[in-house]
Structures are given as structure tokens and as C-alpha cells.
Image 1 (cartoon, rainbow, N blue to C red):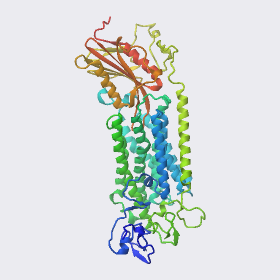
Image 2: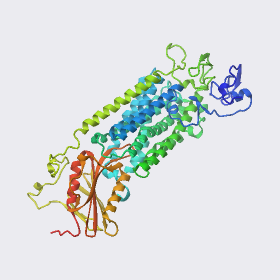
Image 3: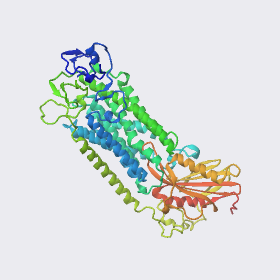
Image 4: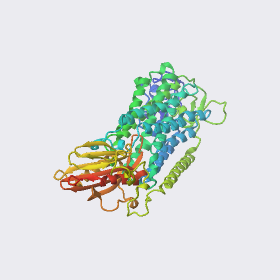
Amino acid sequence: MSEDPAQEGASPVGAVPCDQCGQEVPALAWCIRCGDPLGPERRRGRSGRVREAFAAAPEERARAVRLVSTLYPALPREEIRTFQAALVGGTLLVILLAALGFHPVAVVAAAVLVPLVTILYLVDVDTYEDEPLRVLAVTFLWGALTGALFALALDRIFPVGVAAGLAAGPLGVAAPPGFPVGRTIVAPIAGGLIALAGPLFLLRYRRFNDVLDGATFGVTAAVAFVGAQTIVTSAGLFQSGLRPVSPEVLSWVVRLLSLGVVTPVIAAAAVGGLAGVLWLRLRGPDAHEGMLGPLGLPPVAALLAAALLVATPVIDAIGGEEAPVQVVRLVLLVLVAAVALLWLRRIIHTGLIQESLEIPVGPPAACASCGEATPRHTFCGACGVALRALPKERGDATAAPLPAAHARLGAQRLLIAFGVLLAAVTIVALVVAWMIGQGLDRPACPDREQPCPLAAIALPRLATSADAVDGPPFPGYATVAESASGIAVTYDPEIWVVSANDAGFLALDGYGGVISWILDTARRGELDLQGLFDLRRDFFRTRLLGFEKDREPARRLLGTPTLGHRPGIGGLFGGTIDSPQGPGQEVSVAIVGSVDGSAIGLASVIVPFEVRDAGLQLGDSLNNALAWPSDEVP
């Protein structure tokens, strides 16, 4: 005999007690109350089983990792494939934009991908057609608005500048107080609570009393929150236009896949799962509160949701920014996403079964999924699909709601709508980045072979010869020496602050950490100049996303690299300062080294791209003010 319950007993007569829910139900292939296959009951063979088919999509297992049917459970079977195609197409677009080096545009496309699919889902299935504005306002719009404001506030409290972005490791630069904990632990939990606050507003309305409602509201608010947060956090990338400072491709592609797909999925499952548990506990019948076991307890669910939200930034903090490490982190995040989806899927599955136990059996009607006649209830007796998880029938408003055979848009129109909207967002981002990029890489001085006057630098204050008219030469300047080598540098304390001074290492921060100047030293016999250069370059590669040599001709270093008026070696590089909330600032890195006697010195200046020329000139002024131990100082 076939093991497929849909093939057993095509025309059964009478009723049978379901061993899963304990109710007397029509002896069809599937229980119309809990969706359990009734073949064993009709054979009088087994009892007390757990339904293995997913209530919203009986062709899938309840314990399977499925992205679309879990996040969007009210889709007809054919629409699931359409949404899968939309997600794959959007992901390919993000990869293409990253490969072309259009980083700001790629980030925007990645950030809107899952939120756009979610909006189309709500429109397509039209589950809340009687109150669409209220549902959208307190889920999607709430998530988008609070996500943007939260990103702005986070940037003020824990700014991701050069000093913070490069803190840790052998640099020895201390991060701003609370920065790692704030960005990694506090921010994701606070963001999850804020995203959940919008859906909780709907908990007061008995119109939205199903577990599926709570899960859908939580998923919608979470993806909108994460998408808006990513766009605002990464808005600074537009300062570099469409000519990337960091041309490396693979690490950018992997990072964007994490930002655009995996991170919103984890957030959606965490917030949606917690919302579903709250709906089950506060809106479901008291007799069903224990259906999820310990995971159905709100404190346990809150801890699990917090752990899922924190797991993303914690994993992002592992290792460096090199492409192989990025790939390993992506794999770990995918595993976390799988756990999160399984949790959300179980909540939806349990919620759909729980809702059926209070509904009386109605007259026969045609199932929209399989076309067979089934008593009007919760699950189709012929195919096992949850009728609640299908779009509603339109037409006679006085009739009892039935599932529709197809969603509102249909496969073709849905893909067209998705493609048009995603293309529109991408084109707008392209135009904005292109317009900003028109004024970049133009020298402030027409003669590229001559030093640029300090008056052309757009930073708050630079010392000029006019400062010394009424006072001694170099008024107020300070000198600091690295202890191991004796190499010293003279600096303006109104611009620079010594942030670290250890044996072999000296660091100065300019304008409160907007710019950093780093001096590495060694002695001949311990290391050669090229070796020291390679160590510093490799360190930056671990700390900056897409760190690579800057090959743009308009941004080349002119002349022979010199440090303390000694010729040496050098290079110009580019990378992006990353954070758990997204890449936020592209930087240029100039590394110059030289040798004098037994002393080896290597100076690195790290400047944001928007003040690149000014910052590099400031760093060069320190390079020229560097004194070697052999220099005679009058």
C-alpha cells in the first residue's frame, strides 16, 4: 500500500478519531483540523504520531530548512517558485554590481532585496485586505523608519571612524569606550526590541489573533528595520562615487550576500518567532499554551531571539576581512539562519494546527490548491494544505472566506513588478553615486607636479607661516619619540593627539580620530624594510573590507616615496571600514617606509575618502617632520 496519505482511500465514508488532535473528523486522506495524515487511523495501525508535513506547504517537511515557505507561508505552491526566482534574480544583481565595483549601489540593492520581496508578498496574498494601511504602517513603515533613526543614533553614540575601525590587534589603538560591546551586543538586541514594538501594537486587536499574524508582522518589521539600517549606515560609501577605493571583488560579494540575504533572514526569524510565541501565549486558547513546549515560554523565546540577533555581529567580528575568512563567516551565518528558520517554521506550523481546534466543520468546498472537495475548515482533507495559509477568495464579501486558486498578482506580473521596482531603486542609486563622483579625483591645484597650497585643504585648521609672525618659530608644536628606535616626529597638538606609544609603534589621531598616522619601527637584523611593509599591509587587509592597491591613475602617489627626507618604498591602497551594521566609510591608506643607519621606519596614514587630499597632505607633513636618530637637531 502507498505511504502517501493523499493516495489512500480516495472516497472514504464516515468519520474517524484523529490520533494527533483527538478530534472526530471526516475519514479523508488528511485531518481537516490538524492536518495529520489519517491513513494509519483508517488502517487502525498506529497512534500518537507527530505530523511531519509542514502545515502551510504539505509537500514540504515541517522540519526542513525552507526560506520562502517559512518567511512567506501564505503562498500557493506555484507562487513559492516565483518568489524563489525573485530572490535569486535579486541576488545575482547584487553580485554583478559588486563585481563592477559599484559598492554603494550594490549595498542599496542588497538592503532592499528582502524587504521588497516581503512587500510584494503582502500585496500578493492580500491577507489583510480589510485593513492594509494599518498593517503596513505598524509593520513595514515602522520598521523602516525606526531602522533609519536607530542607525543615525548608533552612529552618534558609537561612531565608526578610522580609530574605531582599526582598533585591536598589533595596532594598539584603543577603541572608543564601549564600542565593541555597543555595536556587537547592545545594538542588535535594542534593534530587535524596537522592531518588535510595532507589531505588538497590533496585539491589542482581536482581528489579528492568529499565531500566523504575529509571525508575519514580526518578519515584516524586522526585514524593513535591517534594510533601512543598512542603507543609512552605508550612506557614506556614496562619497566615493562609482570609482571604488577598494577594487577587490570576492570579499565584497561575500559581505553583500551576508548583508542582503542572511542577516535579514536571521533578524526576520528571530523577531517573527518571538512575535509568534507572544501571540500564541496571549491570544491562543489557554489549553494550547504548552504546544511548543519550553520554546513556547516568552522568556525562553526572548533569550533565543536575542541569541540569534547577537550571533550575527559576533560571527562578523571573528577573524579579519580577507575573502577566505569572509567565506567562513558566511557559512557560519548560514548555519545560524538555518536554526532560526527551523524555529520560526515550528512556530508557524504549531500555530496553524492550534487555530484549527476551535473551528466548527463547515460545508464542502473546492480546495484552491488541489481542486478536490473538502469540508470547509482549516486543512484540506485531500492534500493537507493549511487553507489559512492561502490567499483569500475575492468576490462576495458576505460569503465565508475561502482560499483563492492564485494570489493577486500571479507569477508573471509579480516578477515584472519585482524587476521594475528593484531596477528603479538601483537606477536611482546609480544616478546619485554618478553625480557625486563627478567632482571626485579632481586635484585642488591644477599642477599635479607641484605641492598644493594649504589654503586648498578643507579641514578645520592647518598651521601656516602666518602663525609665527608674532611669536617664536613653530609655536606650540610638540615632539614625541618612539622609545625603541629613537625616531621622533614633530606635530601640532591642536590637530594631533598621541593615541599610542609603545616599543616599535607610535600612533597619532587627527581631528578626534578622523585621520590616523601610524609609525612602525624596527632595527636592521630584526627585519628588513620590505618585511615591515608587508606586515603592515597584511594587517590592514585583515581590518579593512576589500583592502587592495589603489590602481586609479588620478589617485596615484607622485614622485619618490620619502620618509624623514630619506628615499624609500611606498604604496597607495584603499579599503572600507566595516561594522556589524554594514560598511560605512571608504578610506585611502598611504604607506611609506625608509631606512637610516640601523633604524627602519614605516609610516601609514589612513584618511576617509571624502577628505582624501587634505588628509594625505596632513600625513605627509608628519612624514616630512620625522627626525631620525642620526639627524642633527639644532
